[in-house]
Image (cartoon, rainbow, N blue to C red; front, side, top):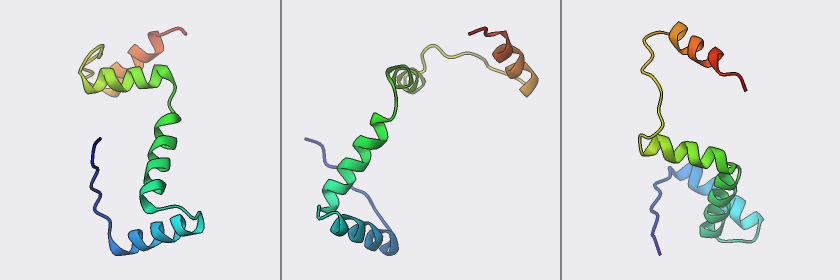
Length: 78
């Protein structure tokens, strides 16, 4: 099991506590549901792309200008 510590300002903590209370769940459960919902929004291809970037794999570039980037993007025919 992993412990996640999150520092919130007082106003945000109070707001999230009210949201959790309205749903009759704990703040921990609200955080768990929010994180699960957020990450579930990505499809398999997006998860793979995120992992590639985090591990510096399958990257393209460098691009020295926006024009260089756009030229490369426009070359892709999907």
